[in-house]
Image 1 (cartoon, rainbow, N blue to C red):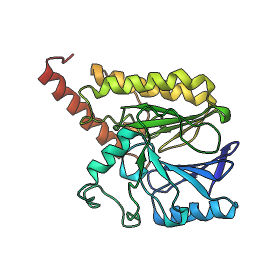
Image 2 (tube, one colour):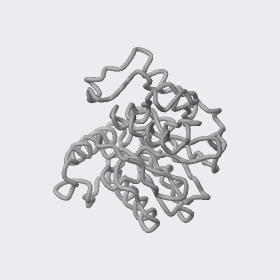
Image 3 (spheres, one colour):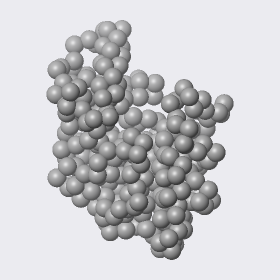
Image 4 (cartoon, rainbow, N blue to C red):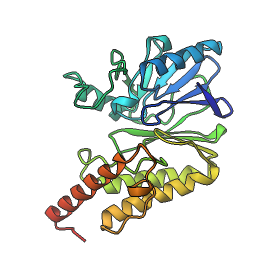
Length: 271
C-alpha cells in the first residue's frame, strides 16, 4: 500500500528488509525509484499506480545491488535509468547471470526484468522526466555509481542505502582504494543539502522527518569514524539494542571491523 510522505511523493514499504519503493507524481505519469522486491508487492505497486489513473513514465535505480534493480511487467515498459557507473556495474555483474542462492534472493523475487537499466550521461545532474526536478547526487559510498536523489521543491531526500535507522553504513571494499573516505565524502554531499530536507527516505528502514536528517547523517559519520579509528562503538543499530529481526547487522559490523583492521595493518596505517 502506498502512503504519502510529501506532496506528490509516496512510499511502498516491503516486508523484505523494510525496503522502500518511492513513487513521484509527474505531469505525464509517475517516476518509480527502486521499485521493490517481492513479486506480490511489485504487483501491488503496479496496481496502486494504475488505480490512481496514472502510468509509469520513468524508473530509476539508486545503485547496482539486486534488490534495487527489480521490475514488474505491470509497471510497463518505461525507460529505467541509473547513473552511468551504476549501469556499467550492473552490466558487468549480470554478464554471466545471477546466482540467486548465493545472493540469498528469496524465491518470491521475480528476476526476469532484473537490471534492465540504461546509464544516464556521466555528467547528468537530473532525472529526465516531466515532473518535479529530481537532482542526482552521485557518490561512491556503499556501491559504484550510488545516487541519492533530492526533490527540493517537495523537501524530500531519497538516500538509497544510507541514512537508515536499522542499517549501519555498509562500505564497499571492492569498489575503490579507500571506501571510508568515499563514505565520508558522500555524507558531506548529503549534509550540504540537509537544511532543505523535510523527509528522508532510506533504502531500508523508517522514513525520517526533518529533525532526523542531520541526526542520521551524524550517526552514520560517527559509525564510520569509529570504524576508521578503531574506537569503541556506541550505535543503537548494533548489538543488543538492534531492532528485532536486524541482529545480522552486528555480523556485518564485525566483518567490516575485521576487514578494516586487516587492511590497515597491511598498509601500515593501523591506529
